Length: 89
Image (cartoon, rainbow, N blue to C red; front, side, top):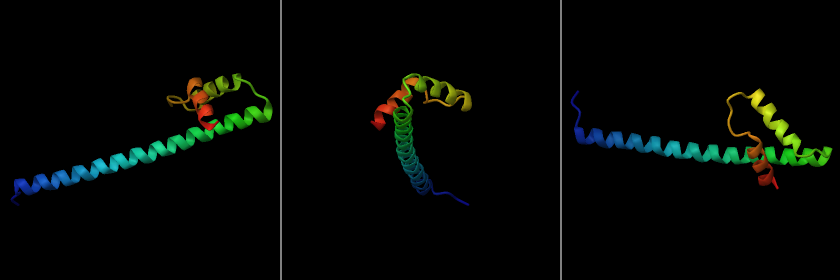
């Protein structure tokens, strides 16, 4: 088999473009999903605080419990949970 270098370069570039498009679409989808997740978490926090009269300490406790249940998972620090709550409001 004899490869035409110019045709192969076009072929390679086409594949690279497809990979690039897929990566961008995946990132968009993931970002949209994360925003929805963060809004939902914030909404649940607000609802429970209102329903049960819970104060600030529930967010701190939730962050600790999430870290225990999902070791190594980033993004659920007390500060981030407060930001999720703000997003929901």
